[in-house]
Length: 380
Ligand SMILES: Cc1ncc(COP(=O)(O)O)c(C=O)c1O
Image 1 (cartoon, protein in one colour):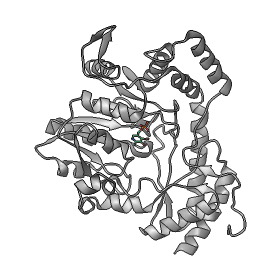
Image 2 (cartoon, helix red, strand yellow):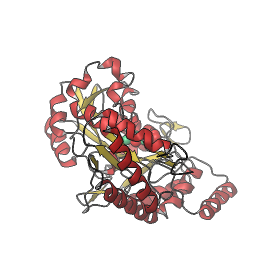
Image 3 (tube, protein in one colour):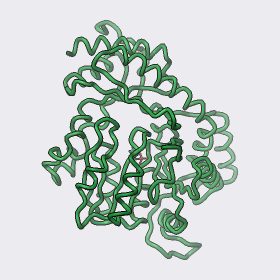
Image 4 (cartoon, helix red, strand yellow):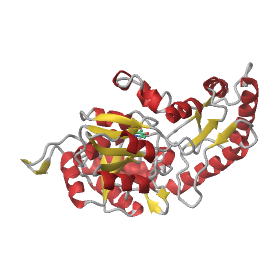
């Protein structure tokens, strides 16, 4: 089709930043400059933390400079060490956050239907050195929280969730934030809700929250009074201004995302050999990720479809390919990991994540449907 011109003149991106009212953001930035309070537990960071904690129905929201540092702080604060079980089918930061703390990430396979970590596989990977499970609510869908909580309790393991994709989601009616000891959000620019760079840890555990509050600010308990090892995990005021502004727009972004997800599901249902990952309608989802799967299981077909979309300026992504276990340093650490991760290997070869968000219209999605149908036909 696009030998002459691409179907879209302007590229359509996955994770194009969602930005609320420019005027409200600039007003807030002006106030910050007037106050000359740019960082260190500023009033906007506190307001953002309060609003998020209230929305998610959780006792503590600790805002941080990004999701990776928030993960590292949560991992240390709950006392994980030695080996921790984690999925390989996720963004590399999930495993890096462990590795960076001197902890060995042990990869467990996923459920091929939901792409979530499989509790049976988790149990299989437990050794005498295992101290915890770091699960991921991939695509803003629920990890099997109840089964993981049961395993953690029975085997005496710590359990935390990487909820980087799950801002504002509910799982079986429970909002993100109350599963395991803590749940970690990312507010990166590409996420459903962003503070440019940022993240947070949500927890209902008062002692844990206090420890993480110290850890994110060099261990300071007051001026000149360091009482704990720490790092610099603080969120700045301009980022918090972006967060407060974007928080005012999330219903609108969710509605657009949802409309787009439904439009994609409709066009994909007309393309034999492709399926859109479904979502539980009973729960609230941010619909940030539109995840398609090539059912044939062939990487060549998937790659050909992505290439055809890209020729047309539809910049779809092969998330999370090739799987963390195939990236360094994990490839050297576990050269044969693929043998125990058959579903991870298979899903990573078949997934395509599509552009969505406010820059993509349902008309665009109808055009994309045509490209998908034509690409699928010629790739097989
Ligand atoms: C699943 C997952 N975990 C962790 C992160 C790291 O978050 P950040 O980029 O805010 O450090 C991301 C996104 O970047 C992610 O998608």
